[in-house]
Length: 495
Image (cartoon, rainbow, N blue to C red; front, side, top):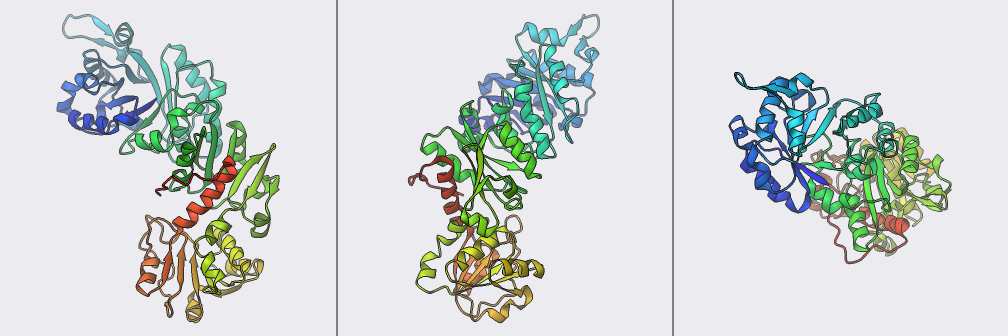
């Protein structure tokens, strides 16, 4: 199930949120703590109006909510709302005391047992635990303890490494006897767990329009882009690893492609700090292949059983697939980069190129150009790195503040760094470079579509290329490596 968490301060606006997302969701979590005080008196009618199974949640500040009431007063208010409405679930924090749930009525009315009232009315209790900073050491025993009460245990914790992510995915097997549980990894490392919630053993994942919890995705993205609710035991998992990685547009290439050819697969971003730990995760959840972006394009090499000629020459890998019990590394950046300029190279328009940057992408670009007989000069802010890459690719190098000395001879400028990428759209690593003659200017950044560098180059009469075409072409080649099929030509890729 995909559950939409409301983030509005009024019931009217919360209902509008539901309507905007109705096609993508199975249930709703009404966040009572986010509603204005005068809205709470009518909150009981919300489940009937939205016509979806609804969780009532009155979250306190320490668990990421807004309520500053004491637990007892919060439970009194929650009871007043829930028992008058048609809620399907109620979220109660695991450390709320029994005494706060046995609520005393006014005057001589008897005490009420809130938990028992909920069960008599058929409302399921979600017993939740939150850690906004880390994974607790007793995570497994905590879930087991909560489940023994007959409630649905909910764990929302914060992984800080890929090793933590491995621990969360282990919960599916380790706690398989607990049929109903909710497992959420918060923050950037936890995004993959929100998408692959079924592989963790969670009965639902939460979505919102405004990322009310760290790492939360939109319901539309979970439903349409990732098809997260359709993942099953036969779904082949693919992904992309990097640090950072959540900005990647690669899922917009692969997931629509999988859907178009009716291939039961999903492509997910994985934030990775240690490559070795990710390979453990890959074995645990049976990942079939993955893309590699900065800074791991060289780090994956020791774990590969087979590599292609391009990988050996470039010394970097951007595509890993599982082949006959081993990992095979290829590099589709090489061919993806060449795609928009190959004709210009072949007809002699491009003979001299200037590459800005000395990372993995620059290495692939340098070899692609050198193998097509283009003279290459490399410039980088750290000159020693430019020198090293130049020596390894049989290219020239120059200090970045001297590149204007070459501007009258350069036919192609390639910007391979992340400078100018959203959100830092006002940056231009070549702000002092003078376009003396019109040339090709190729910026591997694809967001924004026109960087500050490309805009300036256009004003000087240059032919410009952004990174989207390279990204799409190399992605299509990865798709073929992953699936064995050509990328479906009828799919319109919208980055």
